[in-house]
Image (tube, rainbow, N blue to C red):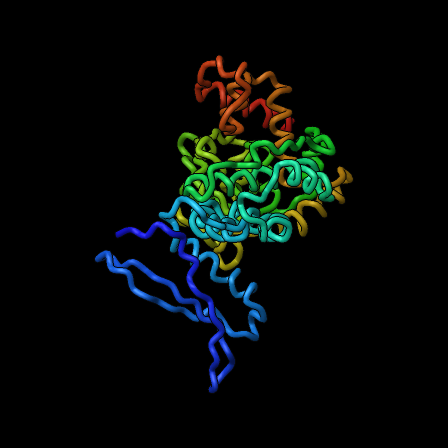
Amino acid sequence: MARHRYQYGCLTRRNNKLSEDVWQFRFYETTPEGRRCRRSTSVGTVAQYATKTHALRVIEPLRLRLNLHHRFGRPVSVSALMDRYMEHELSERRHSTQQSHSSALNRWIRPRWGNYLLEQVKPVEVEEWLRSLPLAPKTKVNLRSLFHLIYEHAQRWELTDRNPIDLVRQRGGRRCIPRVLTPGEVRLLLEQGAEPYRTMILFAVCLGLRASEIMGLQWGDFNWEDLTVLIRRGVVNGKAGDTKTEASRKALPVDPRVAAPLVELHQHSLHKGPQDWVFANRSGRPRGQQNILQRHLRPAAVRAAIGKIGWHTFRHSYSTMLEAVGAGMKVQQELLRHSTIQSTMNIYTQAVSEQKRAANSMVVGILFK
């Protein structure tokens, strides 16, 4: 017969004459044959968890798993929900997403809301908390979105029937306008860049590639006959993963003036196989984009007297130059590989490859006058 009560289990302090006292958790578990068996597990020593409250927090994820099929009366904390989200959903996401979500959960959400039960979180309190944080508006929006996401996870697993973050208001926006380089500034930067960093800049500003996509390029991604490159993956902190979105996995035209330095780079590279990284380090592994930005690109920008730059500065600059040369909105979307554009722009027809190549070559032509 199915058990209808919520199973709290029993946590006791067990005396051990030979070693330190330990916390022991006893519970019932249903076997595949349908039999209920009594189980016990050691939580940790009393030296590790001085009070019973501390030990209860450790066994909460286990108690949550024991009661997954029990719909009512479940006292689940936000901390236990976050642990479950990181175990079951976050592990399937891109490495960069795993890092950013884990950091935000552990640094901001868990310290403030971890001990709250799911039913205790109120929209107005969350709004006041977000308002008090010394963070940029966009970062606060991201925190709200993440909080909303873990409550969606709770709803899917029937841990709660409500998502209080639905009613949380948080205005977004930037504190400053994104930096855009002029063609003259790009040329000054290219003059200061040594290889292979100069070629990285070319791919960033002439194709609008994200930093992770540049680090993720392999020689087999290029079709030298058609002069195209297929964006297949991204690399963050040396770990390869999927591209940011489905729309990002598209072929892009490579202008001959951009392909020329790449061919020369291939001739001098120690790693030339189809599966080798284009911008590999000496050991053949992908480079770290933040290290490149701090040690090579920003010092080159200082020497060129063009001010502070970031990886996304090149993508913003590429987008601005596409607009300057009169590229259609649909062509811009295809070249930048955005998932969507404004609804009023969706009436444009699919851009053919000749249109994309022409728009891309016009941007490159601006730089190679």
